[in-house]
Amino acid sequence: MGGKHLTRDDRVRIEAMLKAKVSTVQIAAVIGCSKRTIYREKQRGLCEQLNHRTSKTYMIYSAQKSQNRADQMRDLHKGRPVKLCPQLAAHLEDYIGKRHYSPAAAVREILLQGMALPQISTNTAYRYIYRGYLRLCSLDLPVGRYQLKKKQNEQYIAKNHKNDRSIEERSAEVETREDVGFWEMDTVVGKSAGPSRRLLVLTERKTRYEIVRVLESKTAREVLRVLHTLRHNLGEDFGKIFRAITCDNGCEFSAAKEMEQLTPIYYCHPYSCWERGTNENQNKLIRRFCKKGKSMAGITPDHAEYITLWMNNYPRRLLGWQRPADLMAAECAALDVKMPV
Image (cartoon, helix red, strand yellow):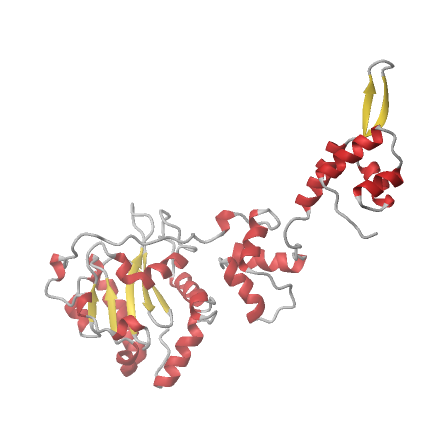
């Protein structure tokens, strides 16, 4: 006779027949299972009961106890088997907890580096974290997804830039991301009170290649200094790599005429950060190293260089798990120009 999983009703019937002194063979015939199944079931459901007349205890089969045990075993073995091994756990804890990778990117690194580790999905990595299988918690994870709210009011040009290029004048080829050379520019600031340095970040829209530089102050002069340094390092290649830059209306980007001498500059509408969505998403990665509300007075060019290398070598899902540095290198090779560093 084939195996059978006993149900709650089966166990209730077994309990009633045992109380009626029905034999194990007859119970098996009624339930439709082997007598060995009934023998095992009797042992699993045994519980101690008190005889109130004699004040002595005796063993009896309890359908409820047996069902509770079956429910616990089912919950314990529910879901897919855990593939976590010490090597995989160490990998995930290192990349997510110390190197600030997302679970998706940490899992992808196993494939990119050809590691001899069990293959798991991103959801499985999250499940291992939330169930406490790893020495990680939600604080080690990057921010969750969010939805940008569309501005309902009519957009207008900032007063300080009425005579400058608006994002509305930007060519349609920028939106397609088919060509390299169109950048978005912003600053990342720390604690507002007291003296503090800032980061100037430039993001290439197609490859998501990032350039991060330290600003001693939030001034147009400092921004111009960084752009002129890039222009000096790239020489004549600067115009081929920096075909246009889009920025917001911050005071640090007020030197429109001077920046226009280097490359076309386009300004977003006020309070419309989604018009630089690529830049804003990249800034979330930078915030893994430079927390909001924390002072950035101690930030150095070495820190900025480390962040730049990390971001440009970070495999990105939206790039088909390719690295921005590799994509930019391919684009520069095709254009026969220097890599912007």
